[in-house]
Amino acid sequence: MKARTIRRHFRESFKSLGRNGWMTFASVSAVTVTLLLVGVFAIIMMNLNNTADSVEEDVEVKVLINIIEDEKEAKAAEDKLIKQIEKIPEVAEVRYSSKDQELDLLIEKLGDEFKLYEQSNPLRNALYVKAEDPLDTLTMSEKIREIENVHSVVDGEDTVENLFTFLETARNIGLVLILGLLFTVIFLISNTIRITIIARKDEIEIMKLVGATNWFVRIPFLLEGIWIGVIGSIIPMVLVSVAYTQLHTVLSSELKGQLLQLLDVTPLIWQVNGLILILGVFIGMWGSFMSVRKFLKA
Amino acid sequence: MISMKDVYKKYPNGVVAANGISVDIQQGEFVYVVGPSGAGKSTFIKMMYSEEKPTSGDVIINGKNIAKMKRNQIPQLRRELGVVFQDFKLLPKLNVFENVAFALEVIEEHPKVIKKRVMEVLDLVGLKHKMRMLPSELSGGEQQRISIARSIVNVPKIVIADEPTGNLDPDNSWEIMKIFEEINTRGTTVVMATHNREIVNTIRRRVITVEGGMIARDVDGGDYGYES
Ligand SMILES: Nc1ncnc2c1ncn2[C@@H]1O[C@H](COP(=O)(O)OP(=O)(O)OP(=O)(O)O)[C@@H](O)[C@H]1O
Ligand SMILES: [Mg+2]
Image (cartoon, rainbow over all chains, first blue to last red; front, top):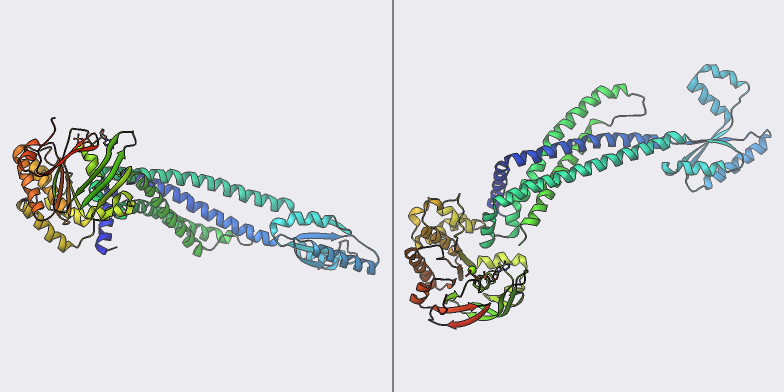
């Protein structure tokens, strides 16, 4: 395409934006609101996912072993148990921790008072088991429970399951909401473009009569849609960036040592801004494409 | 060169507007298409610039069978034709020069070429001196001359006109006819649907009479043959 032609398409598309005044404004506002929600949602989801990832990595099942008095027998039983657990397909890793090590951990966690127990250690030898896929943790611990010499399995069932359910629900609700909004916006944009096309009916008719190609006729309308999307994504990009940077400054020190950690400002905001802009361009293009296809057929 | 063979056209509503039309028009000919209202003249003409596709049959324009042409080839066909209508179809916000130049701009012609050609055709239709005026500032006859200028600015081999004098008084109609004759003298084929008996009977040319979607008569140097 020639530079002259491109200039012409740009000019025409800007002219229509102005001429459609209120419709343009309405479409841009709708895009703004939608993309703002998309941005906020993306940031929340990315942070939650990150938290879930770190929780997932921590998901370890603790297996308490039956107490067997005879030391030799105990050793043999433990070795057998470890072999059996390692055979379970979901298992990634098994780590042994003697009752003395367990006590050390306890003392480290809860304080020196527990040194009392060093005389007669009431704890059990334990195994720490990790699943290949954290989502399989519960299936895995069910299987471990069946094995001989397993006293009990501590798997933090509720925490893991609740977190995953919550994440999934939040994701689904957010996605439905955003999809609904996206369709509304696309519809609005396609309406705006329809008005432009109708306003230029005569011009289009003559263009086709004298042999303008279909793309030559279409491009200004597609551009107009794209501008609506791009203009609509400016405010969301700025707001999301500023707000997250602020939030990060305020909250990240508060959250030190907590399970929930905020992702760093970069690259997160660039990813989110990219998403907003691409989505803006995409809905603008799609919106106008729908009208172009419908009203510029032959 | 225009050639139709066994052309049949049925509109979606069931009306048969062309019922077995076969005709050959040589390069450089001047042809009137006459016939009663609703006979199928416009349909006949529309099939020549692919505004309508025949239901069956062949329409060959400049060696290409446009009945079987894909939609994306239509622009190329239109660039080799000029089309003129009863209602001028000028853009009200563009001045005379811009209206004519529009036809070349949208096919991405070079600005220098555009300027030169537009001046030439405005000269031919005698309206160079009004090129800065808007269509609303011109008479009907002048507007039609602009529309003709636009149709020939791309130097087509064929000019197709559907009742170009339909909205004009006799004086203006004769003016328009002079321009068409001039265009024809330069070797361009002219096909013109008209209800203007006086013109057809005075400027004697080939006359194709369409009735009920069929060619009822086809006479060189004929007259306005049917009674309206
Ligand atoms: N787009 C269309 N859809 C359906 N029927 C149509 C269409 N265009 C024309 N017709 C019908 O086809 C027949 C021929 O119409 P056409 O316009 O070709 O006639 P015409 O000879 O040009 O008439 P006129 O002298 O009044 O312009 C008419 O019966 C008309 O109603
Ligand atoms: Mg007609």
